[in-house]
Structure formats: C-alpha cells, structure tokens
Image 1 (cartoon, rainbow, N blue to C red):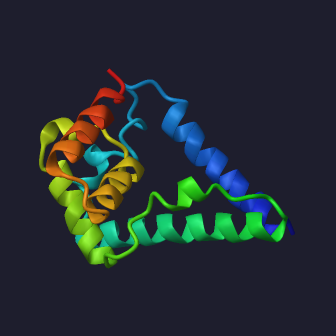
Image 2 (cartoon, rainbow, N blue to C red):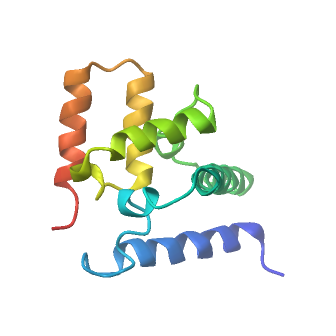
Image 3 (cartoon, rainbow, N blue to C red):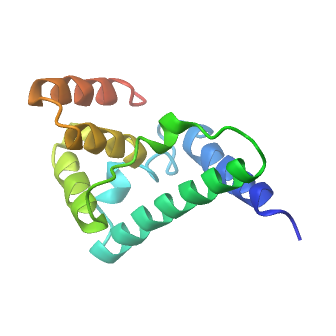
Length: 137
C-alpha cells in the first residue's frame, strides 16, 4: 500500500491536470468554476467544500510529518470563521454575477477570506476584477 502522502500527491496532480491541462473550451475547464458550482445542489456544494477542506488538511498534515514546510499562504487562503453553509452562501453570492463564473472555486475562497478580514468593498472589487482578468479567454 502506498503512503498517504503519495496518494494525496497523486490526487492533487490529477486535479491539476484536469484544471490546467485542458483548453478553455474543453468540457473539463468548468469543473472547478462557477459554471459547475451553479449547477450543484446544496448538499453537493457542502460536500465539495468539505472535500476541499479535508484534502487540504490531509496535505498539510502529511507534509508536516515528513518535515516538509507546508505553504502557510496556501492554507491561510481558506475562510476560518464561517461555517460551511455560510461559505457556500458567500460563494453563491459571488457567482450571481455572471462574469465571475469563470473564477475557480478555490480563488473565490480567497476572496471570502479577504472579506472576513474586513477588506473594503473597493479593495474586494479590485480583487474580483483581478480574478476575472485571470480567467481563460
């Protein structure tokens, strides 16, 4: 049986291949974005977020066990003071703007984390624009 960190790495690599290895017109390009999110049921949204948080915590704990310095900036991008339901609702609100639907869910979580920290609406608007600008054309 493979060590857990090898399995976590393999899953991460597979997800990255799907996310970045396809053209923007591919059916796979929308799997981690608002186009996918808006089609999910509430239960699926909760499962998606819980899976993302769980995978991230597994990744961090495996890296700590093997004396690899986990990326604090990666882990700090997740909202920390909201419940999963509240986070899901904030992601829904973010994707109500149709031009935001190309932004990956993970990046929306960074927007929520900034909102939690109390960034101004002007700063959040600038960050939203940056996120939209990074979408594949």
